[in-house]
Image 1 (cartoon, rainbow, N blue to C red):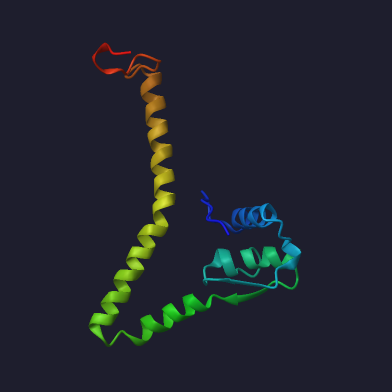
Image 2 (cartoon, rainbow, N blue to C red):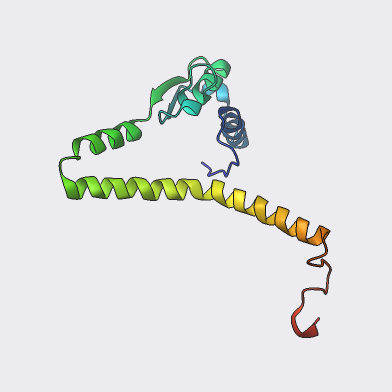
Length: 139
C-alpha cells in the first residue's frame, strides 16, 4: 500500500498515519478484521497500544503477534548451538536495527543541523542571502 515516514513511533501517531493511508485508498477502518505487530509495548499495549486504539474503532480487528516476528524469535533461539547460523541471524538483526533506526537518527541530525545554522546566523558567524554563498563571485 504505502511506506510512510514517521518522526515518532508512539501508538497514537502510528494510528493516525495508518488511518490516513487507509482512508487515502478509500478503505474504512471499520473493515479491519485483524492486525499483527511485533511484541513492542507501543504496538501490543493493552491500554495505550496501537492494537487497542484500532480495537476501540473497530471491535473486530483482533490482534495477533506477528508470525514473522515469532519465526525470527524461534530461529534465533533454536540456532544458538550452531555458531555460523547464529552469527548469521545476529548480523541480520543488527542490519535490520541499523536500517530501522536510520530515519529517526536522520531526523535528529537534521534538527540539530538546522539549530546550529540558525545559531550561527544569529551570532553573525555566517550570512544568509541570495548571492552570499556563491564561489568566485559567479552569479
